[in-house]
Each structure stands twice: as C-alpha cells, then as structure tokens.
Image 1 (tube, one colour):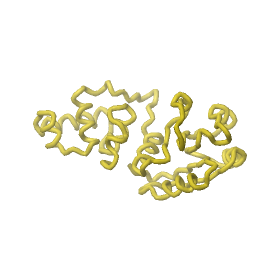
Image 2 (cartoon, helix red, strand yellow):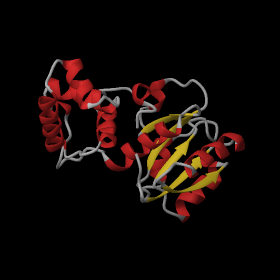
Image 3 (cartoon, rainbow, N blue to C red):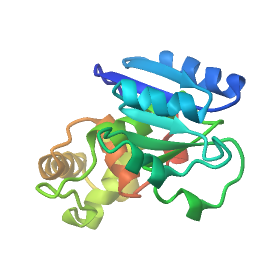
Image 4 (cartoon, rainbow, N blue to C red):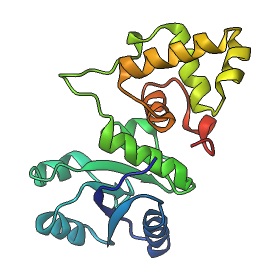
Length: 204
C-alpha cells in the first residue's frame, strides 16, 4: 500500500497529544509523501481551507463542540477533500454516515495506509463501476485467500483445486478488475466487504 503522490492532510483535533500522534504516524508511512497540517480550533480550520488546498481532512467529530460536516462542506465548496472521522471515543455510527471514512486512535499504520489508498485511488466512477457481482463466487473466494497472504498451492489445497486452475482464476480476476497486485486486491476486498480490515492486518 504505497503511493508516491504528494498528499496534504489536515488534522483537526483540540488535543495536542492526539493531534501530534496522528501527524507522527502520517509522516512515517513508508512510500507516502504526506504534508500534515495541524489545526486546534474551528477558526484555524476555516482559515486553513480558505488559504490552501487540502486532500484529506481528519477531524474529531467532537471538534468545536460538534463538527457539522455538511455545513462545513457548504462553507468550502471549492475544496474537494475526503473527510475522515477521527474517533477518540464511542460515537453512534449513524452520526458518522456523511464521512468518507473512519479512523480510530488505535489504528495501525497499515490500516491507515489501506484507508488512504482506498480513498485516493479506488472510488468507483459512473463510467467504470466496480461491482463484486462481476466476479464468480469462486473468484471472490480466491481474492479472500490472496489478500490473506495464501500461496497458490495453499489456495488450491483449501479449495480442492489444481494450482493451474487457481492461476487461471487469478488471471481472470486481474482481467475483470484491472488489478494486478495483492495490495490492490486488498483494497478492492475491503471496499466491497469481502474481508474486514482486521482480518488482513499484517498481511500487506
């Protein structure tokens, strides 16, 4: 899960300890060129979005008392950022439906990298929809095995197939999805709910 793109990430959090921890994690993601910007007040956040480009905003939903995401987007229509809820406590999931992603303060570096990649590179478009139904049930089973780090032989043994059949399925998967790496398949599998992030952490 690596990207050479330059990514400007704004972190909006009142706690300097939490904010600095997120910044430190982002700066040490291997393969990423991230420029973190820290803000501690709503005034600073508004000014930041007026003055400079932002690709991602990581914000505590309790920021500023309660962060009104829809109103904030309306106030800054020229900024086409992705919005990640930074969860420092238990919050009703229904209150987070307008965010693009969620991130816990207990998130691993691998988990953050997967989520950033998913937000930046695999959002389905109207011209090229990515639907899991385009794959057969067997192909979906093989994707799950691949992203869990299994070899072709291990997959063949598990699914009672020949190695040649597994390789053929993998070629068909790559052709259908235009994804040619385990990392890309991992993002696809998470986005399309074939696996959960915790099932593959440490495998990427």
